[in-house]
Amino acid sequence: MGGAEPAGTTGPTHERERQQPRSALTDIAEQTLLCPADVQPPPGEATPVPAPPSGAGDFATAKPVTTATTDRVRAHRRAFLAQLGEFRRRRALVPYGENGAALTVEMRGVRWLLAFTDEAALARCARARGEADRPWRYRAVWGAAVLDAGVPAVSEETGLPCGVLVDAADGERGMVLPPVVGIVPEAFTLDRPGGQGAAGRRE
Image (cartoon, rainbow, N blue to C red; front, side, top):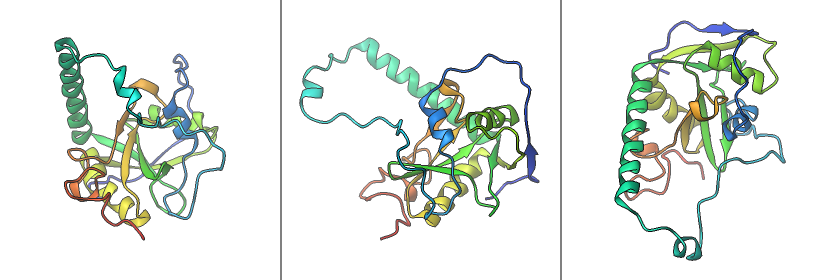
């Protein structure tokens, strides 16, 4: 992955901060696994990714879209784009396993690469997985390199679309960067024009 600094480690932490409420991202963090495609998460684990609505009934009862709703959507989009830009311009910590591959989790046919904004966030994820008593090796990489180089590498290796989970154990303070146009390279998105999913998908 381009733009990496020398690898570091982080171990047990004694941060004095209030325990964050459990979230879907915490569940995802607990299912972290190594990158190879033949490694699967433990069977029977909860899948926190919500299914999209289906059936006409879901839309028949929907509330009319108002100007206030539209304004909120635009505000959320601006805020998200600002966060995305900040992530691309900053260094992120990308933990890796014994084989040197970045740690990822697979959920519903999408592989998620884990990235953290600092060692404290990585330590919280280690605690969520019950592995805070061992050192965690990581690389410091530009956020832009995580999205533009790391995502394609994982997708080509696994044959699955790949997104990025930022600070996966931090609930609403974390960020989900899905494999869609405008976030990851277009050839590796789920919604690319005229495409059928991420490039490099294995048959």
